[in-house]
Structure formats: C-alpha cells, structure tokens
Length: 217
Length: 141
Image (cartoon, rainbow over all chains, first blue to last red; front, side, top):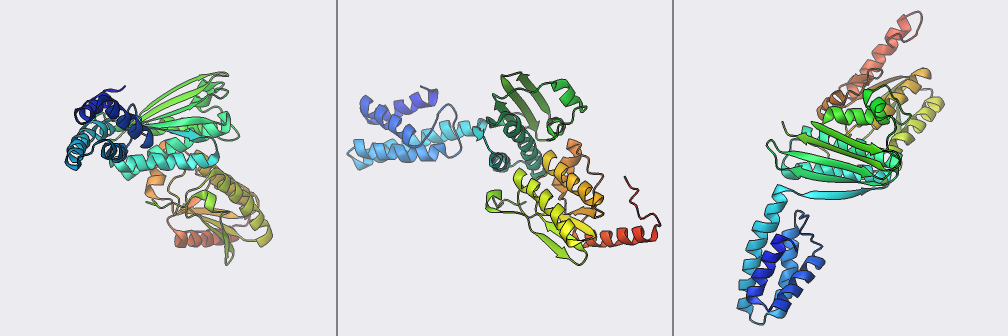
C-alpha cells in the first residue's frame, strides 16, 4: 500500500469501521481505475466520486457523510493531485502505425497541459513520432512512456521500449553513414539532434530502449 | 496550432487538384505513414495521366513533419522531377521549419515557397526560365 493510500485509509477509518474503510477505498480505487503509484491528472476527482458512493452507502448520517467526504477531498487535493503536479507518467502502447499519430498527439497534449511553448510541443511530438515509428517498423510492438520532469528548467522524458530484434551497427546508424530504406538512421539522429539528453540501450534479440529528455529553454 | 486534428483513419486519401497546368496537393491534417505513402503513389499516377507541368505540395495544415514524412515528400519531388515536373512545397509552418532544421533534415532538393500563391508564381517563373534556357534541364541539383 502506498503512502497516500494509507493516509486515505486512516482518514476513512476515523469515520467508518476498519473493514468498511478498507472496502470503500479498495472499491473506489478499482472503480476509478486509479493507480496510486502512478497518479494521473483527474485521478483525484474520479477517486473522490467513487469514494463518495461508498461513504454514502456505509455511513447513515448525512452530516457525517459530508464531514468524512470533506476530509477525503482535502486529502486527495494535497496528496494525489499534488503528486500529479510533480510527476505524471503515462505508458502508451505502440502496435500499429495509427498509434504513431495517437502517441505523438498525447505527447503534444501533455506539453500543452503543462504550458510548454508551441515550439517545444512540436519538438517533443516529432521526437515521439520518430521513436514510435522505429518501434512499429523494426520491433512491431512496444510502448512509449511519457513523463514530465519537475526539474529546473522543467522538461519531459520520453522512453521508447520494445522487445524487438535490437539495432545492429548502432554506432554506424548514429554516425550517419548508414541509410536504411525506411530512413531509420535519419530518425534516430534527428531525434538526438532535437533533444537535450539521448540514451540508447540495445541488444541483439533483446530489444531496444531509448530514453530522451528535453528541457524547456 | 491544429488541436482539433482529424484522425488520419478518417481520411481515405489526400485529394490531388488540377489547377491550370499544375497539380495541387493540400494536406490539412495530421499525416499517418500510410497516407504519405499513398500520396506518393497517387501523385505519380496523377502526373502520368494529367500531363501537368508543375506540382505544389501545400503543407500549411501539417502540424508536424518528421523524418519519414519529409523524406517521402522529398522522394515525391525527385520522382516528379524525373517525370519532368517541378515540385514546390509551400506552407511549412515556422515551428515545423525550425524542427526540421534542428533535426538536420535535408530538403534542399525541393523548392519552397511561403504560401500557395507564391508557389504557383514560382512554378511559373521556373517554367519561363526553363523555356528560355536552350538545354531545358534543371541544373540546380
């Protein structure tokens, strides 16, 4: 159980029996599809709604219900939404070429939400597009993870991970001497040119992981 | 920017419009790989069947051009040139232009213009130029 979860349970436990409190929380998390390890924007609101259903069910007195919910709301605001502010990480599947468009749009929206500049949005979306295309073309299937970095200046981290064949002759690909029919060399080098940090791990038959970070300048 | 982007799955193919002696392709949505590849085929066939003299690719609605998209547009221009048709790309947004330069994408083989008007004008100029030249060959490469 994560720390915010136990704090929530604690607050619910002050108004409900231990068993009811646990049940309200567990059901709430499941119904709201909230993972406290990886809080997402909007989680707090959805979780509160689900917890409200539980509390109204288990607590008879209307005033007691409201008191309990006020406490829960306050807690969610500081704990869950506060954490989102610091780090929200989303993991998106990349299986088809449509996913390339979906994933890069998600990256753009994420940057938009945080208030990153339009030029930064395009830069990030383009890098995501390159990495996602590499997954689709060479590994077939994989994931792209997007996370905001609460650094100074703030930034965004993109992780592209697949269990594909790996990239043979990585050094040649990155040096620009290699030209694939599909243009992978250009994609990886272009991505490296776009971002501030670029790390790549690849092993034959085991897959590839590319981690890039871009910071708002 | 184009936040209400049309999902490429909703778009069958990119229309190619005949305008006087030219073909005009105006891309007004986010590009998927398949759509770009389809465009390459369609343009090649359109050049062949229409006998057009120039091709304009208007990307003013494109919010993002990565290496694959720009490479395909370059390929289209190269194929068109081999078929005797000059290509001008226009409407590259400032943000897309900056990103392409930062990436190091080379689109030098494609002529470019600010907007559709300027592109059609440029094509006319280029054709006049070519007509006055006795060889009639494009030596800019």
